[in-house]
Image (cartoon, rainbow, N blue to C red; front, side, top):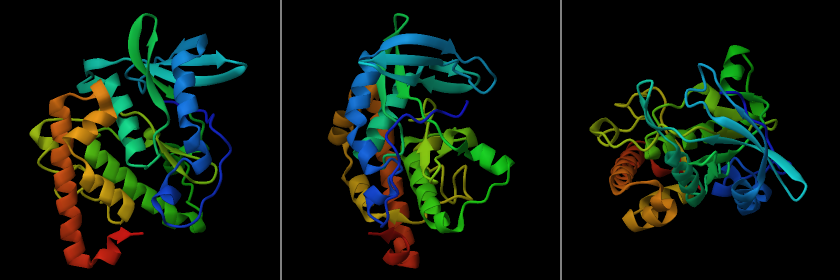
Length: 276
């Protein structure tokens, strides 16, 4: 997947350690989300170009949208079913965005349902970034020393989020890095798995697929929101975009996450695991 073009408001560096300060979109950008959601749904398509490459498995469309003199790009996709060995679903893109928003992580770009060429699909605001994580690694670009601490905490939140939604395909092109070293997460059409391998253990845990990479430290506000998730809350947040079985699987992973965090608190102390 090509790196995405940022079209949100100018970035503001936010200091401190509240959940909002950890959020990867700034407070100003977050207040504009509803505006961009409406834009994605109603703006006219003035240009369209399908991405066909080995990396773009779902062959998404890059749309140029225009409304009231504003012109922005978006990514539209509608995969549904087994593709190259993976289950794909455009609805999971929207569910991931809505959960990200509810949990106040603010790491996923605005994503809505939109019809294009007569079909339903997900439409996500196109994000521009300084580089992807893949480019960072290939070019051996070091994280600035003063950004290492917040960058690591963003990684812990990414792992927590992917644990919750069972995103089995977080490759390096799906981490976008902004000029001021904030992390934006894209591509969630391989999430919300329901099989036992995704409900009996977490991806980012000692027994999981990514056992070298743990959640480690998490903000208290996120932890409290995680514990408060239930069937009713998730159903209201994601609407029709998750089935009852998929919601049940999310709750099973929520329980695993809470237990993992509680065990880690007992082992290392709360101040080493949860921060305010």
